[in-house]
Length: 72
Image (cartoon, rainbow, N blue to C red; front, top):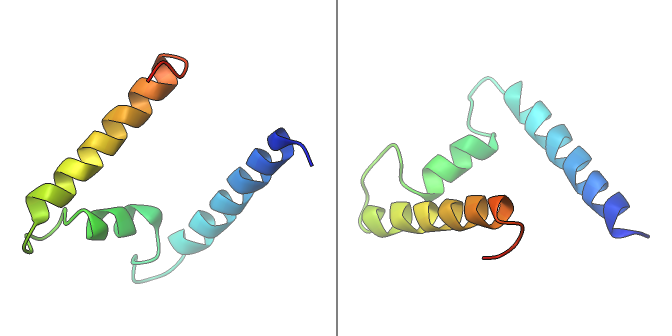
């Protein structure tokens, strides 16, 4: 199996899961909800600053990685 097919399957699976999650009435099944929960975006439990900093660092790296063609 080629890598392209694997990545396309991954993308299709992501959209299938996220699409199904969008139809949940509680709104607690989406990726956004889970990222907000893991990074303590909507509340301030102990260590929330470190969690938010970790999310910021990851997203900064990810954007830089994509925009520089993998330089970072």
